[in-house]
Image (cartoon, rainbow, N blue to C red; front, side):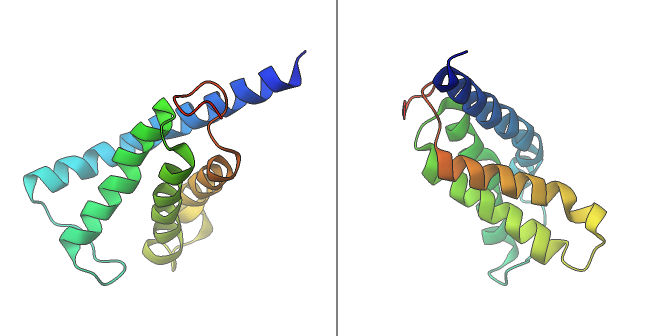
Amino acid sequence: MNTTLLKNVGLAVLRIGASALMLTHGYGKLLKLINGEGFGNPIGIGATPSLFLTVIGEFVCPILIIIGFKTRWAAIPTAITMAVAAFVVHGADPFKKKELALIYLLIFVVIALLGPGKYSIDKK
């Protein structure tokens, strides 16, 4: 089989699948932001700014990644959000509690490094 085709299909599956799953986490936080609900302050900038940045990382950027627009740039805030979740929010928790955030972190770092592939708006 054509390895370029497989690479591009693989990148599309990784980027769309991981981002769609991330949206399930981000949607709840978007609703919290809209409803003015409370949120933690893991990096010391205030609850509302922390929630706003989390919504960008878990909802806005995954939409951009799904469609493949500015994919490498969009993957960075998502990866940073997952690093904060793994190492700050769940830093003292057992590995099992932070494992999902670490998996997402790895996936979005790979997307940032490899780009969106051919099947995207960016087409790189």
